[in-house]
Length: 262
Image 1: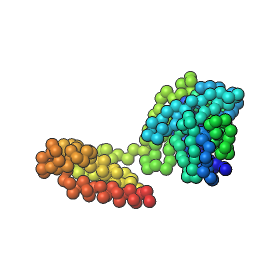
Image 2: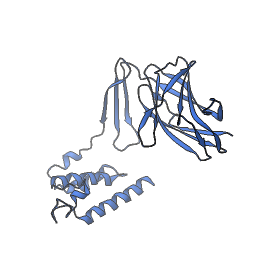
Image 3: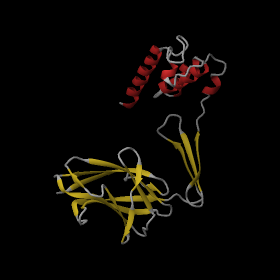
Image 4: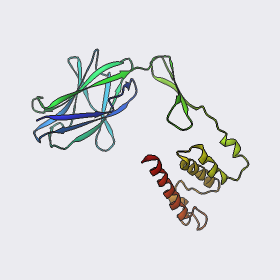
């Protein structure tokens, strides 16, 4: 028998002291009758207990700690029920999060294998994947400006402290186009049309945001469709957002999504 393993989220570096998600998918070529459990081994120079913390999704979106222990110079953890589990031929994906402590920049290896519970013998092959960890420099300023591939362009500035952790983060826009100024003194409804010119790719979300702002000024709570709809509980007939208006805006937003995402 042989297991095939695939990983996502491990092809880009971890940043020390920042939690990062990754997945592991395992598939066996034949059903496994023995009761086994997954074993993860982290290897690398100078690894010690506490250098890395791993959590797993328990199936409900809640992440629980995966206990790790030293085995020689490696960190080892086991994933699965204590009594083990039998394995079919379907692919199974598990979600994890890992956090490396500051000061552990380097390249490590994570080995995945399926071992028999009774004696720890490998019964499903192995697959190793390199794991790169990058440290943020202490007392430094990291600036990315501009961030491309977005409309309007932004800059990000991070300042780290003596421990290499981010102590201050700032995001700023470096393109001012004056929409705030030329809307002054105009009919509020004009803003719904005007702000759609902010972006030629995503005009509808800008118009929708302006629409919510205008409705808020008029006293409509359209962000909550149930309480904002005319005739809904607490909203007198004719005093809320018409039901057909809500349907129309949902159709427009759906069309925008199709245009920009497919």
